[in-house]
Amino acid sequence: MHTTQAKFFLWAALLLTFTACEDEFIGRDPVYSIDSENYFNAPADYENALIGAYDLLQPTYLNVLLGEIASDNTLAGGESANDVIGFQQVDDMIHTPVNDQVDNIWDWMFAGVSRASYILEFQDKLDFEGKAQILAEARFLRAYYNFELVKWFGPIPIKPEGRFVLGDETSVPRSPVADVYAYIEADLQAAIPDLAVTAPQVGRVSKGAAQALLGKAYLYAEDYAAAAQTLQAVINSGNYELSDDFAGIFEVAGENGPGSVFEVQYSDAEGAGFGCLQCSEGNIAVGFNGIRNYSGPVFDGGFSFNVPVQEAYDAFEPGDSRRDASILDIEAWADETGATYGIGYEHTGYYNRKYLARKGDSNIGDQNLTNPNNYRAIRYADVLLMAAEALNALGQDEQAREYLNQVRRRAFNDEDHDINASGDALRDFILAERRRELVGEGHRFFDLVRTGRAATAIDGFQAGKNEVFPIPFQEIQFSNGNWEQNPNY
Image 1 (cartoon, helix red, strand yellow):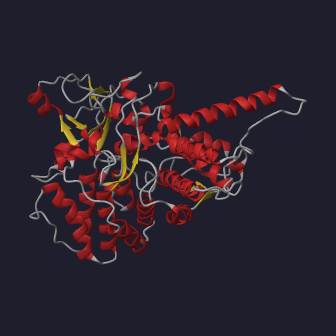
Image 2 (cartoon, helix red, strand yellow):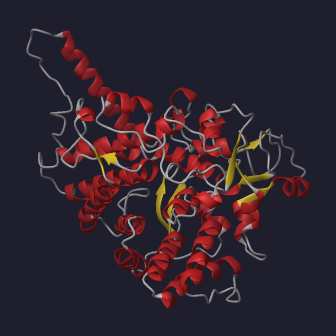
Image 3 (cartoon, helix red, strand yellow):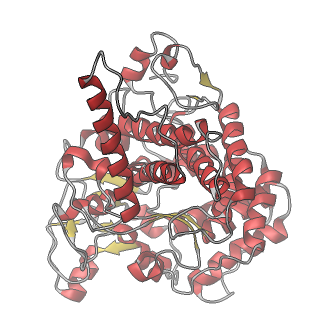
């Protein structure tokens, strides 16, 4: 466990201990007690609470994994048609409000919102040096979790004044998507002035990360002028650049590199178990993506979920260096190295190389749950392509092409593959480039949805239904009629 995360869990344990002790002394005045209402009494308390808010980034492994499975990039895979049935249902677009995996995304992202809101609810209790930075990071995190929620579920309940409490589910409505984006944008706008250009620690939020997320929120909300301006601020800052070696980005040495705008940090320093996947400090998706029954060099084995399809592999043009760095052709690899492997359900012959387990980590506990591979949540190439898309929507095609072609020149190591199109044709090239550049990173499904292309690209996708996922059944029950289910679920 990271030292900072260990501090959070110590704080949580102490909180439980003190509240338990209080119950033992009913009828007496407690000598000393800490609960959530009187916790913040020193700068360290805010720092520890912030660690707790960051901790819910690690369960976003599921958002990435399931987001790919939902798209046309991959099939669910696994051992059989019944292996993690929630994955299989989403892959086939037959998921319902009773789906443990979708339910986990709802629960874990709202837990993140709650932890960030906890800090902001008590922001005025104490003044100290560095508080503005902590509050800005909390606002970014709340925006990040809410952005995930609105992507997945559409209208969601929001409560700017603080945490959700028991009873809110029957009184706080689900806010329209436009209002949710406005809320996300307001949090990020408030955060940006107080964030450092260089984050105080690796893995914490920088000003550029908040600007990039804000630009992305504007893009999803189709405010193209604001998106272009905000994303160009990141580009023009000069703080980021495309790494020359695309494949190296996804190795340990490439973590938090010059093209990294924001990464979710993972560690192999602590074991994990299936009883609490969200507790793992490792990237769970990496083991789930892994090669079934693998024996050979470079990689470790895994469960063979989220297997890329032939169409995704063929989407790369000849000479594109990203193809073999992004998707592993297991038959070619076995021929080259002598490696052996098993055949899982829906075997395509391909694996998500970006997030495959590599040899050399500690393998504490269940090795499939403790992989240290960071998730590159926002990359500079993504920022360039989002800016290109926004500028194209505004008719500023010359600059849009320049950003698009920067990404392509890195992929081909020449200028012979530059795109010269304009208008709608240029937009098609930009979206196709996003697929190639970002395959395996959890963006494709949402790109297809927001551009109105999902129904023609994804087998089983029903327009008017599958643009969002169902609100978990129990949440609808708990709301006692306050929340309606998403259409056609």
